[in-house]
Image (cartoon, rainbow, N blue to C red; front, side, top):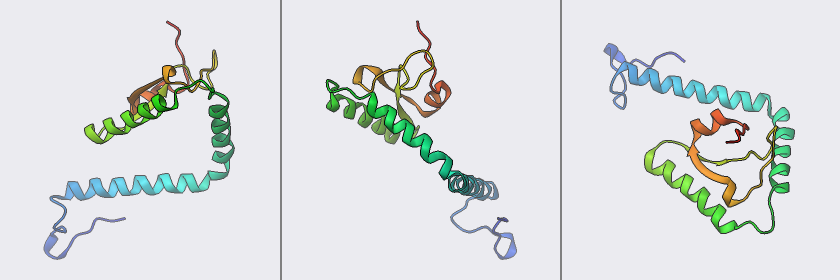
Length: 127
């Protein structure tokens, strides 16, 4: 997608500068690549997602406080909207860890930034 330049080298009014236009184009391309990737590999993702959903269901216990769990997820959404930084709910002890597997209960959940959660992956470091 080439840069959009109007007559006499002017940019559309909603872009303040050529660099802003390039940033918007770059983000558009990134999103298109992500959509194309998801479309291309959706058949591979289905079993992986199903396995994760099943693991989460198997890790849900009857005595879990579902209201407290919902409150933790609401807190993550609230922090995301207030700060603009994506926040996620992290399982302190991963549901599918290599050393141990945790439960989907309120005491095993915490709110962290998306970056922290993705960096942690499914690792558990005993203290």
